[in-house]
Length: 325
Image (tube, rainbow, N blue to C red; front, side, top):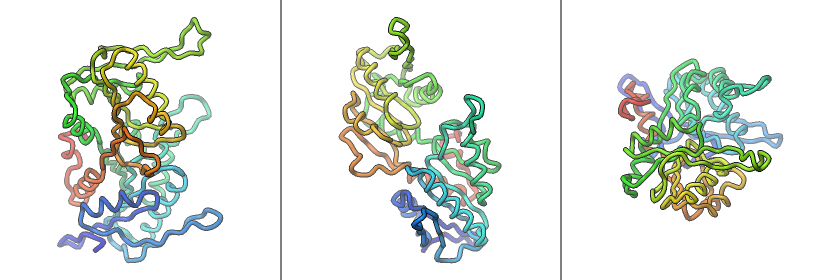
């Protein structure tokens, strides 16, 4: 069956975009429901057509789409799906975007710049979304861009449980790869009960301001260093940070990040890096040819499925994180 029905006839229906159907199917399997059959076509001129092949009237709809490259195509497809659901009389529409598109454009750094993360929230709302669900937003303020409920899920428990099961955290130091991720690293230290270090990147004034010097603030010598970030994109920053930690005497270096964007040279950089292990979740698809020996991928599907269940049952998503949301 493709939906869950309660005695009062409220019923849940799952919908999947084409960016990463494997994740949506995993969520559906965990929840014991089917994915609503959908006809989706990309025309020769790149326009997208969507039609759902069964009635969605009165349903509680969850539209799952991973925003991998090409981001704009998959974003437009999800917007069209939401519009189709609104016009077909779905009762409530929740956008499930494990990796929120344009999240790094959350504020203006200079004049005449957009705040694209806010624009995305406006687009979802205009299309007909009543609720957003995402994992580890790049900036928490994005929750305020959408005029409705936002379920902000955390991958920290999933990632940290794996690390605790495999590594001795008594000899571990959590490392922020730059000043901007210190708050995230601090949450990790609380979870793992270990020390904190920070990579500070500066320009060497003796070399005409052209060479970056990575200063390590904190004790890393002889330690297992865990670099943490919300995403790995081109992997330049995190690989340079790993080299700096090894140069400062780290026993070994591992990385943990929620979103494996892995653009451009990322895979080659990570393959050649000092990392013993790189741990990510499957909020974004990683094709088999882009896997590498140090890579470990943990499934985010159980967390998403539990969150959807709590929303559907009018429960508490916050309870999934022991009070954090």
